[in-house]
Amino acid sequence: MEDLITKKRQPRVAAVHDMSCLGSCSLTVALPILSACGLEAVPLPTAVLSTHTGEFRNPYCRDMTGEMEGILGRWEAMDVTFEGIYSGYFGAPQQVRLAQRLIERCGRDALVLVDPVMADNGEWYTGFDAAFAEALLPLVSRADVITPNATEAAFLLGESPREPWNAELLEERLRRLLALGPGQVVITGVELPQERPGQIGYYAGDKDGGRESFWQPKIDKKLHGCGDVFASVLCGRLMRGEAFFAAVRQGAAFVEKAVGRTMESYAEHWYGLQFEPFLRLLG
Ligand code: PXL
Image 1 (cartoon, rainbow, N blue to C red):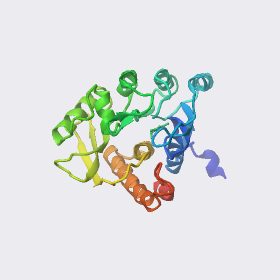
Image 2 (cartoon, rainbow, N blue to C red; image 1 turned 135 degrees about the vertical axis):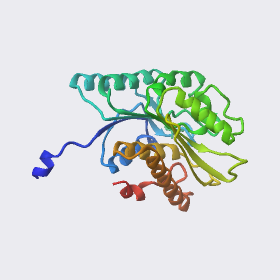
Image 3 (cartoon, rainbow, N blue to C red; image 1 turned 180 degrees about the vertical axis):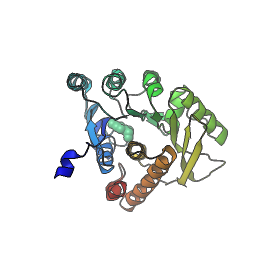
C-alpha cells in the first residue's frame, strides 16, 4: 500500500482523436494501447461518430469543437500538465488550433506525436481537402514525431499521391517532411512497386540522418485502422522511454500480429484491426 502512495504517478498522455464508437480506430484503439503501455490516457474527443467514415455508409457524426474548448478551458484553469500529446483525426480545421493551445498551455515539455489523419489510398477521407492539410502544417511543425501514411505525406507537401513511389522519391519526401520541423518522421503504408513488389512498409527517419525501413507482405484486403494502431504503439513505446527506431519496429511488429489475427475472422470483423489479444505484449 505504501508503495502505491509513494510511487510517482504514471506519465499522462492527452489523446486528441475522434470517438468512432464502432470501427476499431482512433480513441477505441489509442486509449487501450496507451493504457497497456502503462500510461494514463486522457481523451480529448474531437468528434463522436457511430462508425468511422471508411467503408461504413452514412455515419452519424457530432462535431466536438465546443466541447473541446470547454474541456481545455477547465484543464487550463487547473494547471493540468501532460507528458505526452498525441493527436489524430480532427473533426474541423479550427480544432488544430485547439491542439496547439493544449500544447502551449498544458504540454510545453510534452512529447508531441501528430498523426496527420486525412487521407489514404490516394484519396482524401470524407470532409478533408488541401485547405485542411494546410491548416495542419503549424501543428506538424511543432510536433516531435509525425506518422503520415504515403498519401498524407504527399498531401502535406502539396503534391499528388498518385505519382508512383520509388526509393528516391520516398527519401526526398521524408527529408522534406523533416524540414517542416519534426525531429522524427515515419511514413507508413509505403509501396515501392519496383524495388519491393508485394510488400508494404514503414520508412522512418530522424533529423540526424538515421534511416530504417520495415517491410511486411501486403495483404490483399483493405484493412482500416492500421495507421491508428501503429501510431498508438509508437506513442506508447516512446513515452515509456524506448528509442525511436526500436519503437517503430515494435509498432510495425504489433500491427503485423493484429493483421494476422484480423484476417482469421475478416468476414465478421472487416472494419478495423483485432489488436486486443496482443495488448498484454505491451506491458
Ligand atoms: O482511422 C482513421 C480515422 C479516424 N477517425 C475517423 C475516420 C478515419 C478514417 O477513415 O473516418 C472518423
